[in-house]
Every structure is written in structure tokens, then in C-alpha cells.
Image 1 (cartoon, rainbow, N blue to C red):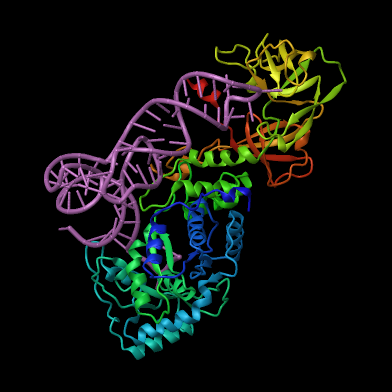
Image 2 (tube, rainbow, N blue to C red):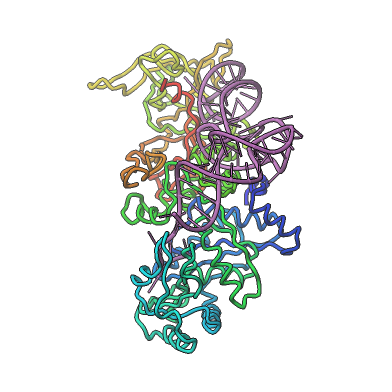
Length: 559
RNA sequence: UGGGGAUUGGUGUAACGGUAACACGCUUGACUCUGAAUCAAGUAUUAUAGGUUCAAAUCCUAUAUCCCCAGCCA
């Protein structure tokens, strides 16, 4: 864990923590046990991070523990790949479940016994209706349902059929086990919910041992109870399930009494956070994979260079409530910059190079100049940067016919090359199409290091890279994956994909970037934060832009 | 004419009958060898209508709007 963990980003107050404080004070519980319960059918995203930070954060705040439990009750969509990635992502985010790794599938035998218990108590029955028929009998939102003709099947017959369901005697969908509750309830979840279904599908963990699997409703709360979870925190859409959650716990021989609490899931502008949509982006090739740096997945954000601590800070800032809301992506950018600003070494990289020749600098010569690794933090040391007659500067740092507020290089103007010299643009070289291809400049040897002995000032300082020493690199500039802040609000969300979400530049970087470690994020001064992408091979370097620096000039330009 | 949840500046949150606050954003200025960072100032808020009260974002009543639920998904 990093030094930023001491920040109080997770120890705020929210209604969940209020409830826990009350429970503790009233003696309803003497400890706190939470859990993060993913289904292993996809990769974790930043919305999950909110839940992870909440559940692990709450446990830490109250001296309790948080379990990692896989709700692996539907083998149709679940895979080991997801089980592995989820553990990697939670660990990367900075949380430790210790010995408390569980699987709902570990409880299959007990769940089966509990189902038998319900049948024996006359509170569950085997239904032969088809899926379509069950839907018809269920009624609608405004009309009550009607009882299945099999609802009053004798206990012995139910027991026999349920055993035979387990034994694999029937085909998928032939029968289900239903809890017998209330077909007229206004809450549709109470209209005799299905709690077991026949699925002749191999399970990633139990293999072919089972041909029936419990539904979410008959596995989640039960696993909570078995694990001794005290506060089962989930998202708002499960609020309707709470009466069922409670009914099942009350009617089962559980030895603990967990309570469910619901909070609003995270929504973020300019992205999507639904597993279905993220899966579609991956499967249809709109992105390179689950870890595409444009994805809001934890693996994507990690590859992008976002520090885990920034995600934790973000989770702390957005709070926890029951009101649906959409957080502005700029808040997340702020957290990323806020963290990287203090931790990232400063380097120079020219994204879109424009050649500069210093006419009065001796040909074939070069020198090393000292540059600070972090101007605000001298303890981070210095480095040597080579300077020579031929350099590259940023194309955007030159304008032949500059507007009034443009401070950078233009014909006849003097600027500073960071940590180097003052240079003045003497001549502009263009190709036959009129495009600027080179600048002829002169430098003032007296300004070595970046200051003029006569005290004269310049209005701009540019970053640069020596042409003879610079490292060529592919730099990937990312923008929002979607060009609408609410993708899919009008029509297909895929229509809102941002065609410019990835722009690739052929850049040139200072030599100190040659052996940047994967995972380390540095600041390219005046540009943004960057990290090495795993696509790099040997001299074929690939960098990702994690996030750009705030750009006051870009704003001014728009006016 | 079903059930459940929600509504505070542009965005996210706080205030738990007693001065509507914090962060982000935005605007302006200072500083600057990063048009960054930092610093300073400014901007803007209780869905509506009634009621209770000395006092209401908070309590009551009604209304409006939004979200979730009719998987053998979770």
C-alpha cells in the first residue's frame, strides 16, 4: 500500500456507517462483518470499486472484517478467468480479505438441505410449469398472480421430485423449486420465487457434481448467514428483494441474522458501467479487450496508469447515498492528477515534434544539462538532459501568425527552453505545401540553465528533446470512450462511441525515459501523465497518456 | 387503481428543528523556468403548494418529477 493510504478517504460518515454505529450502540451486534460478493461473469469496473471501498472501508473503520465471496450460482456465464481477474483487481485496489475467501458454491450441499427443510415445512414446492407459464401465472405489476396447479403438491412428492431433480433425472427447465409465499403480493419477488433450477452445466468449481443450482435469492443471503456477515450491503435494485431475503432467513435454520442495506450504484459521465455493455464492447471489438485503457474496468484503469490510491480517493469523495446520481468524470480526473502531481517524476516528451535548428550552436557538439525531477520536491533529485544543435519542440508551441494571447514561439520571439537556453526564432522553413517543417533559431549562450544574466524575461518556457539523443516512441492519447456524457440516452449506446477516443502520435522522448519501469507513471511536463504500455517491445516503445494536465491555454483559445 | 426508492448550487455530497456548508467545475487575479501545481477572491443551492412552530432542507399533508421490479440473471 502507498503512502496515500493514510488519507482519510474512506472514513467519512454515511448512512451505512450511521446504521452500524446504531447497531453497535444498541448491542444488536458486537462486531462488523461485510462482504464484497461479485459474480465471476465479467471484469470489475470502477462502480465495483465504490462497493469494494465501502465494504472493506466499513470493516476497517469498525475493526471488523470483509469477505471476498464469489456468488457463483449460475455456471452458464461464469469462468475461472473472471475469478482470477477479480482477485487480482481487488488486491491491486489495495484490499486484503485475508483467509476470508468464499464461494457460494461451497455451500451447495447446505443450501440443498435448507431447501429440503423448506419443503418439509410446507414452504416450498416443485413446480412443473414451463418458464412461459410461470410468467403468465405471475401476473403483472398491477394485477396479482394466481397459484400454480402444483402449488399444493404433498410434501413427500415434493421431496421425491426435488431429489430426482438433483439426480439429473429431468431436463433443463422441466421443473423448478419455488418458495411458497404470496402470489398476490404487490412485491413480485414474493410471488413464489424460483429458488432452484435445473441446469445440466458444468460449474467452474463443482464440475458436474450438480444438475440443479440455487438462484441468487436462495444463495446470497444464505451465504451471508453462513459466513456470519452482519451487514450485507448491496445496490438499490435489490431493495425489492429485501423482504424475500428476510423471509428466507427467518424460515431457515440459520444461526446468524444478517441485514441487507442498499445504496445507489455509481454512474459516471462519458462511459458505461454495465457488465452487459462492457462485455459487448469487448466481444464486438470496439476496444482491444477488458484492459483497454479506455475501459472503466479496473484492469483498464490500471493499464492506463491510474493509481489505485486515486480510485480510493475518488470513492471517498463521491460518498454513499440512496439517491441516483451521475458523477462528472472530471472529478475522477482531478483525483488522478491530485495523486500523480505529488508522486510522478517530471520528464520531457515532445508529442508532435517540430524540428528546430540552433544556427549558432556548434555542429556535431552536445552538452548535458541538469534538470529537476520534481520542481516542488527537490528530494526527488535531478537528472542530466542532452542538448544539441538540432532539437524538437511541440508543434503547438509555434505559431507563425500568433494571436494576442499566444506567449509561445513565433517569428522573432524569444522563449526559454526548459533547463537550457533562451532561443529566438529567426526563420521559418516550409515545404512545398506551405506547411512549417523546421524552425531556424539562435540561442544565447549566456542564458545557460535557463536564466539571463541581464535579468530579461521571457513569457514562455517550452519543453524540448535533442534530435540526436531523443527516443522515438508511439504515444497513445486517450479521450472519453463516448462522445456523449450519457451514452445511449438517445438510441444505441454504440452510436455514441467517440471516434477519436484513441489518437496515436509518433513522438520523441528524452533519454531518461529509456528504462521507465512498467507501471510507473511520470509527468511529461506541460502535457500530462504517461506510463509504459505492455505493448512495448525493446526499442519499440509505447506510452499511454494517463490523463492530460489542465490546459488553461486550450480554454483561452476557445474564446 | 401494484410494490419499493429518491429529489439541497453546473456536478457530487454535508447540515439529523436553530447562521444552508464542503469538494469538484467555472470566472477573475497573484505567483511561476510546466498557460501545470500553489495561493487569493468570485460564482451559484433546499422540486412545488399548503400546514405545524418563536424558528423548517429537516416535522405533517398534498402534488410533481425521476429511478427500480413482471429472468429458471445477479
